[in-house]
Amino acid sequence: MSAIDRRSFDGVRVTDIGNFGAHRNARPGIPAHFHTGIDIYSWDGTSRFVFPSAPGAVVSVRRDGPFAQVVILHEDETSDPLWTVYEHVAGIRVRVGDRVSPDVPIARLMTSKELDRHGWQFNHLHFEILKRPPRVLRPTSEHPERYLGTYALSCTTEAELNATYHDPVPFLRRRWLEQKPTAAP
Ligand SMILES: [Zn+2]
Image (cartoon, rainbow, N blue to C red):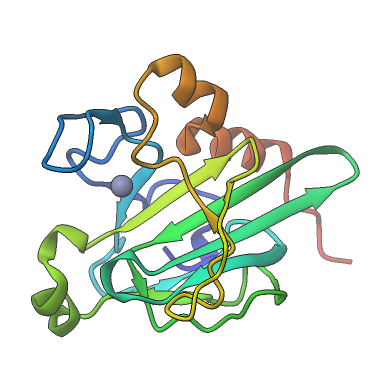
């Protein structure tokens, strides 16, 4: 969705199996778990940019192929900190330490050429809202800006899921309703 459509959820398309809390069966090397975010398609098939959902600071980036990921910390005096996660992105335009705003893209979705290479199961944005701090990781030479990791594959109970994550759809709907647009001066 583009920044201008941000006050409505009408353009958001969650994939068929991409709801928050959807149960994922075990696969080789990955235990059964609950889906920790939502999977969003490009709203009209042409809008490729990924915008942060609120102002914040970039705290972790990984740039490798289908698992490329940006983590943003949102802090203000009025509420507990939150972290938003944007995964399966490409063309990342930010670095750790950058301040971001909802009007400036941080990355884009993969092109069909990139999806041919990485797999079409990644043809969406995986978006999460964490309510507790992400896992701390030590950056490596392969991932020099990866300071944090999520709990995407490790929420094996609903209690754990709900203690760690917000369901993005009702959370954002509520926030948007609270933030009534102010009249132009
Ligand atoms: Zn997902």
